[in-house]
Structures are given as structure tokens and as C-alpha cells.
Length: 483
Image (cartoon, rainbow, N blue to C red):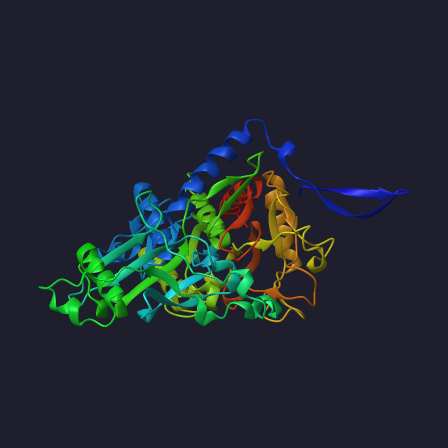
């Protein structure tokens, strides 16, 4: 743990967190910088849960992973060291490496989520108001709405045409692309608005993305344009038809996400931090997947890296962790190992050990009033271990046992993983949750363990490079452990 005891008159007062840069092993800073550069590339290109899934699947296939469903369809029996994956809905993915011990003795899991706060296009999204074409949106997850206005935005997603063809959409991040924006009122006309709270200043229905302002040309031989009431909308629909071959009705069967435009970047004159969209929770999702992919030895206990969807809205739905995806996939794994039975499945889940790999809130000196002074994580002081989450009286929390916390501490200390204990803030201020409680219902040991962030849930979040690397190092040490 990157902390030290502070003494006063020979009495230990508390543990003070210290940054871990000068405690890195010889040559480790180069590994750290290389990993962070790879992560920045990933974060810049994987801006939706579908793109995260596709990126991780590509890495798995290059590493020789096989489709678990196909393995069972072919009647292949897995042996220790074999590597498989299961994909679901193009959004949730589970990577697995079979260990030497029977599956019924439990798995080592690292579980993260890939969905992030954003704006989603509504089912009937396009409308023209005056001479402006706007995209009607519904925000997804916990955002501070005022942060999303006047910044450049990109649109990503898929559109399923009436013939079943899937069209990929990505506009706003290439140099030749246009960008989009949500407009705001100038201060000179906002006297009444200045009296509003931050929460009410920008209502959700005002988060409408500006798409265009030029009308379709009213040519003599263009009857549709001459008769159209919304000529700006007509022009944009024609552009969409030309580029993607879609019509307006196809937008009903689409998933279009509006996200900040631009790549993740190194932050600070010392380049010690990373500024990017989607650190929550892609910084942990990438680390968990990479940790498993980079573990080469045949493990004692089977290893799992799980990246799921829908955590930001309660983990509901078929691709969220409130579904049966985990149980179904472990059942498929048992079948592929030739040892399936219902009791063994239950035993495996109950005996599993898991890191709920989700981000934590860092102490921000600009907002000290919400920090729990001795219990907030600090930037570049290491991986944040959160024994319990929840809000106020631990409502909705999954509280890790003291015994399991000690096991994780020992793993990290033995492998020189810099870590720090933390809470989410002062007791009565707020709180939050992760997928931990959904995993703990199986009886397995779970603790939240992730990277601390500044500006969490903002369009651009801040992570420390050392913390980012320690997530990878810590998850790898955990996956390789024999409990």
C-alpha cells in the first residue's frame, strides 16, 4: 500500500497516502507508459459498449481464444490452459482460461462494465424547429446535464434497415468529419436562468443536438423539395440515404449514442494523467481483459474476465449483470469441461472470488467538503480498494468480509501492487453502487477494486497513469492467485 504512518510524539495518528512513482520497480515506469499508451488508443476508439466488445473480442481471437458456444456445438472437451470466450448481444463478453483445479472449486473473476453516461437518440429523433434540424435525445446514466452543452459531440451506433442489414455509424472523430453540438444561451439573456440550480439549469428535454441548418434546394424538377414543409430535415435525410442507404423509419430500429468528440489525451505538463471520455468503467474493463490475455501460465483456478453492459442504469436487461448471463456461461463452461451438473454450478459460483472492477472517486481539493478526510483515494497513490459502496447507511451496498479483504491485501502486497483503501465520500453526502451485490448473491467473495477518477461521469474524466497501470497489474496478480 502506497501509504506511510505519521507519528506524533511516538503515537501513530493515521495512514497518509503517498504517490507511488518513486516506489516502482526498476524498469517498471517504461512498462507503465507503454500500457497507458495502449489504453489511450483503446479509449479513443472504443466509445460505445459495442465497440469495446468488438475491440476485446479481436484481442481474444488474436490470442487464440475460441467461441465457447461453438466448442460445445462441436463436442470439444476443454483441458487446463484452454482459452474460450462467450459473447452476448454484441455488448457483453466473458473471457475464460481453464485452470488445473476442478471448476467446482471456484473461479477467479474480474468483472467490469463498458457502458458509460451519454446521450441516446430517441426512437423518433429528428425534428425541425425554425431552420434548424435537431436530434432529440434521452440521457443515459447519471450525468450533470449542463456539462454536455457547447462541447463538440460525435455520433456512434448501429442502424438496422428494414431488410435486416446492419449499418455502422461513426461521425465526429475523424479529421474530415463534422461534429455536433448542443447550444446554450448567452449570459446577457440568461438573467432568470442564473438563479436556477445546476440541476435545473439545463432540463433533459433541452439536450437536443444540432444536426443541420441548410434547406434542400427547391429546384423546378424536385417535387418532393418543393412540397416539403421541413426542408432542412429533408436535406439531412437525403444525406443519410446517400451515405448509409437508410430512410427515416430505419431510425426506429437503431441505437445511436452521442458522445464527446475527440481522442483521449495525456494530461498535465508532467504527462502524469489521462483525460478521456469513458474512464468509467473502460479503464477497468480494459485492464481486466488485458490482465487475463497477458497471463500465459496454466492457472490453478480457472480465470474469468467479464465485461458487461447496462451498469450505469441498474444492470437491467439481457446484457446487464442482473440477467443470467454469468450463470449460463459458467454452465456452458462446465459442459465444455465434461463435468456439468446443477450442484457443481452452484458450488463453483459460491466458491468463486471476484474483484468488482469499477472506478472510485478521488479526493478533489476543489471540493473538500464532500471528502471523508482519511478515507478518500488520491491520484496516483494506487489501485482503490472499496470494502463497501452504497449510500448513507450503506444502503444497496455489498460489504466485503474482513477475511477476503485480507486475502486481496496479501496478493497485492506480495506482487508489489500499489493500492489504497477508500470510500466514496462523506457518509451523508451521497454514494453509489456497482455490480458487486449482483455477484455476491451467489455467495462468492466480492470486493470493489478500481481506478480513482476526478470529474467522474463528466464528458471528460481524469485518471492517474500510475493508478491505471496498477489496475492491470493488480488484476493480473489476482487472476493468477491460488486461494
